[in-house]
Image (cartoon, rainbow over the protein chains, first blue to last red):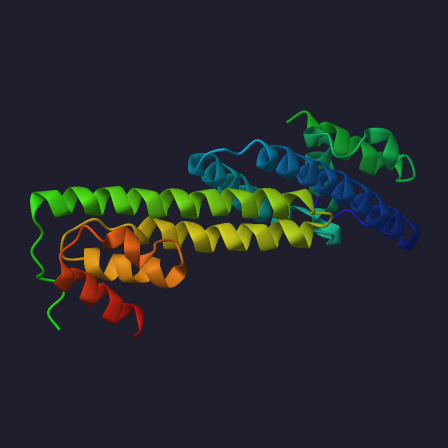
Length: 108
Length: 108
C-alpha cells in the first residue's frame, strides 16, 4: 500500500486542514477537562507530579501528532481515528482511495 | 562564617526535621492551591503548557530543596525563610549561633 506519496488536490488539502483542526480542538478540549478534573481532586504532592507526568507525555504527543505535511496526512488521520479524535465519516470529502488507506491503517 | 560544618545535637536534629516538615507542608499546600486555581481557569492549550512549565520548575526545585543533611540545614533554613515557607521564630529551639547564621544568610 503506497501511503506517503499520496497526492492531494487543493480541495482535499483544505478538507484535511479543517479535519485536523476539528480533531485538534476535540483533543485539546478533552485535555482541558482532564486537567481541570485532576487538579480539582488533588490533595497531595504525589498527585501533582502525576499530573505533571501526564502533561509531559501529552505535550510531547500533541506537539508531534498534528503533522499536516502531505506525506504524513494518511498516517495522522489513521492515528486520530484510532484514538477517537476523528471519525471516518468526517473524511467523506476525500477520495475513496485515501479513505481506504486510512481505514486500513486504523486496523494495524 | 562557618556554616556547612555546624554541629547539631540530637534534640536540634529533631527540631530541624519538624521545622522542615512544617515548611514542606506549607509549600505543598500553596502549590496545590496554585494548581487548582490555575487549572480551574484554563481555557486554552497554551495555558496547560504554562501550568506544565510551572510544575516542571517546582518539581525540580522541591526535589532539591528539602535537604536534611546536617551540612545543608543552615542553607536550607535560610532559603525557606527567604521564600516565606518558614519564620525565624520557628527556629527558636535552635542555639543562638545557628539562628544567627540563618538570619545572616537570609540577607544575602
